View 1 (cartoon, rainbow, N blue to C red):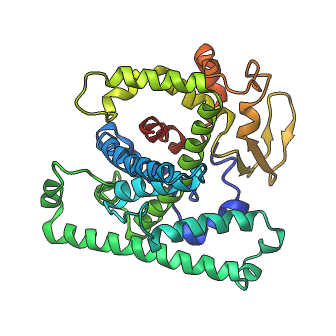
View 2: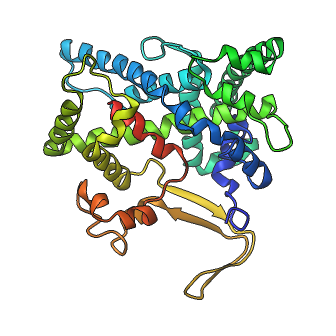
Length: 360
């Protein structure tokens, strides 16, 4: 359980100055409270309008690719393009802000990409583990500067939204949102617990920053691998294309809508198989706060850090028939009981990334 084996602070601690006590880094009662308050953000009524945003952001990315092809370019960094597309989508969904980051530079988006790179770089460098050493290095200076840019942007949005809320009052403010897309900040500002207490501005900022980090990198990684696997298997790629073309046949628009997502079974199987082969998060760590007794009688002593290999589980022949087959979309379909038990999702975002995946 989360109480017996909370998140280990070794890697997660590097994120603390950036993300604060959001869902990713918090634990115990605070985590449970925030998890309850954030649940409405993932309600279908909130998510449905986001499909239009995903379509818009994807169209911009596709237009860039067409320009590259017209200019005679034969290759490009797909992950870079998809990262900008996911950040573009997230900024609209979280803040209702359009920086047009796919077509021009944005200090805020550049800072998020910088922070993501620096955290991974620090994790992989033994000499940068200590805080007092790290913040004396050029990397530490860049990290703090990027944090300031991100925090300033988030704080300004929250302050402006809070000012409008206080000016209009809760009822009038909610009425003004009718007919509009409700963003993540709106959900957090209106959320309150059983005692009627709202989230503080600091808590809202932590959740917004966490959402921007977790949402862009894992989704971009998942989408990149999906496109890679389909490119490596043209037969499956053609099947996905035919399925979607049949779905859109006879329509005035060629846009995927929310109602379409349940009618793309083969495309969904390809997405799930790609996430099994190449999970965006490959490992999670937990520190035992008490002795943990395993079913076979062995004991994990208190204080030990346990690494759970998501990649290893997804490739384990003891639970997956022929797990090393290059790419088998039917594997998840043929063994649905295994899928539920043995495909680990470290959070809600990996499942949500299937929404923009279908947009592509």
